[in-house]
Length: 462
Image: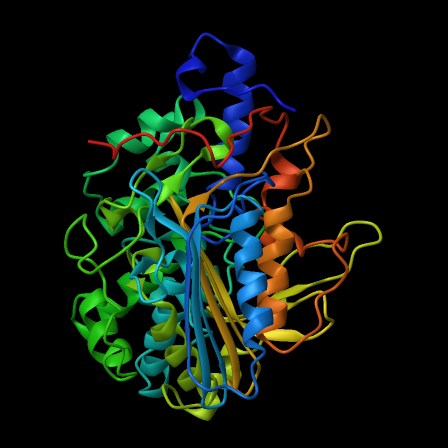
């Protein structure tokens, strides 16, 4: 059992805690992608809800059991949509609001983080098809004032979309107090407006994690992709994506929020920040200008299944553009004895689950909310899962992530939903989903905090 460390205990004069937070913050928040799965914790079952159509191809009992396992492992609440052809199943488990006990529902709207990147990439590839953008042209040809010099000449549009640009992430520079007091950093940023050009400047000024040509996930790439869309279309990029991607796909509950609030019914979204925000705090109300075309979308699990099915069937972009989208680079460098389990394309990746099969999709994370969307290559079998408690990981004295029951439960549900056979309980979880890929090599020391699902929840930040 680890001692609980609250955010209020993190003081600027505490050099050890400051260094610990700096290492974790700079690593964990380099991406909006998932990788912030909660640590295992025992919890009494809370109310569940599930709905299903007649689905002879889907094992409804197994789906319900594996979804409930996520909550039993310590997640406040989760919801899932699963499809096999025309057969569908939707379920929810746990609570949408810890304080009131309001149960989770499968139709709630949700901040989906970096899944936004797939939408942005589709929009860029539509312009590639029209001849307005060339994938292998330097970004400086389009945005010379914003990306001047060698970077403007050497970084191509393709490098932005597959994260091989060698450009750093802007998140830590945009939230510098994350290294000293995470709750204060998030509270102060709750209603702050950030221009995309400012986010790009912060990313360009930061130190890259990897040299150009090597995959290193950075949100700056997709803010630049949005500004590229603005340059070639003359339209606000969010408006362009809405008209030409979201509406084209017929999605009814997917949108870029105009205010800090989610429009429709939604769960509260609790952020733990590895135990430094204790008790976890609700950040479902948040100005998402800090994420923009890299991660600001709101959607539902059903909408995301619709989107990825149409995308993988070539209904949103042409066959040539879909082939480009599926040209991948290694998404991580396997350690000794490890295998490559993720390859990243153009806003779309392929992930190997413990059943040995590869699936296409993306994941996403924002403060308090995580999403995973995966499909078979033909789009027939699909799962999208959302949940409302983030950065639950804990680390050992060697800065390695501790095993988490909830990690395994999420992977077990996804594998079952996609028709595979879950691996034994002690099988390793893919590193991409256990912790952010940047965390393991960068962390210098680890928090020894633990937050349990029974902990009191702080009121919404003001």
